[in-house]
Amino acid sequence: GEGVAAVAAGAGGAHVCSADAFFETGAALPRRKRRELRATAEPGASARERRLRVYRACFSSALVPHAHARCRARFDALVGGAREPLLVLVDNTHSQRCEYNHYVRVASRARCALLVLELRTAGGEVGALEVGARSAHAVPTRTVRAMLARWQTDPLAVLLRASPPLLGGVHDADSGAVSGDDAASAAGAATHR
Image (cartoon, rainbow, N blue to C red; front, side, top):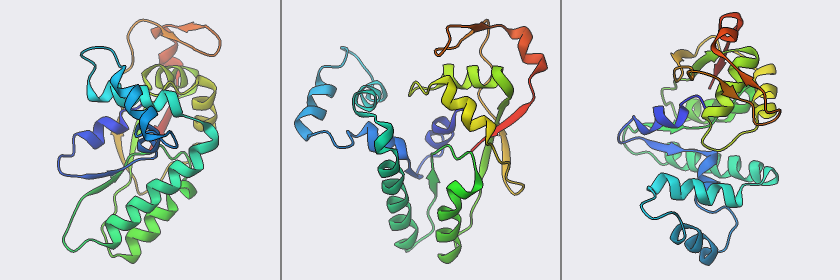
C-alpha cells in the first residue's frame, strides 16, 4: 500500500524479485486453474488486474514462507549468476532488518552495491488505515498495524516519500470505521521498506 511495486515498476530494465509474484503467478494452483482464472477475468481487464485476480484466488498465509523462499532463490540466482552489472529490486515489505538480512549477505558476498529504500508514510492509526486502503492485495488493517508496531528503521536506508495520503476518509476494513483528514495531523512517522 506504500507504492513499493510502483517504485519497482518505474525502474526500467530491472529484474524484480517479489514474494507477491509467487501468488500472482498461481502459487500451487494447477496450470489449468490458473488459465481459467485469467480467462474469466472481466473483459478489458489489464494484465495487472488479471494477476491480482489470480493472487486473491490462491493467497494463503500458510504459503507466505514459500513465497519468500522463492523470492530469495530468484535473487540468489540473479546476483550469483550475474556476468555483467544488473539492477535487481526486491519488491517486498520488510518491517524488521532481520527480514532482509539474507539479501544483504548475498549482495555482499557477490560484491554488489546495495541500496535499501524506505518509503515513509503517516504513522499510527491513520498510517495503518491509509496503507491498508491503498494495498492492491487487500492486506487487512490489523496486519498493517502489527507491521507498523514492530517497525525498525534502517539508519543506512534512503528514505522516500510514499504515495500521497488519501483524500477524504479512509475506510478500515477490519472495523468499518472511517478516519478523516483531521486525524492525520496527530500522526507520527513510520517507514516502509
